[in-house]
Length: 212
Image (cartoon, rainbow, N blue to C red; front, side, top):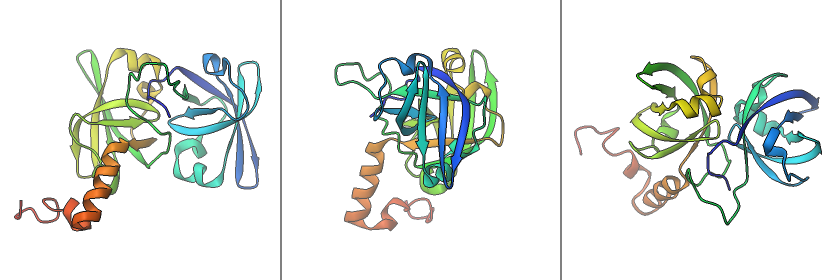
């Protein structure tokens, strides 16, 4: 489990492809402290297992599904990545409960500076957008953020200066792909409502605007 509070921006050193799998070698900085094979670390919000280490360099294996369903398959040597070690039971949960299981990917629509913060707008599929609510939580490339406004096929969040400096989000450009994870509580609530009332219950008011 993770919190969505990025510890360090790592750098991809090399990518070794073996059939449909890829070994990612990442300069991990403080995220490598105390690491050992078998540990879980979130890389751009995707939970990966440490398979090798040498100093502050960590190796992760990413299978074909991970490469296809996240933006990890688009990484190249030199790419920056957000890193977070798994949360300990005795530490504060400063963000929200993040599983490191990427639900979907989205595309950056725009980054717009508004005063001291930057508004990041992301386009995503309707199925993922259904899990979001205004002032709820969402994880973008492993960063815990608060939804400012949820739309039918997208959402926007505000990035404060610290987030811009401590994560890769300030470097994102329109059209780039980002990893998305919705709040697990929202996913369970949606599943429960659909089980009790049927799938149409969560679509009511969107597909039938006259019946609210």
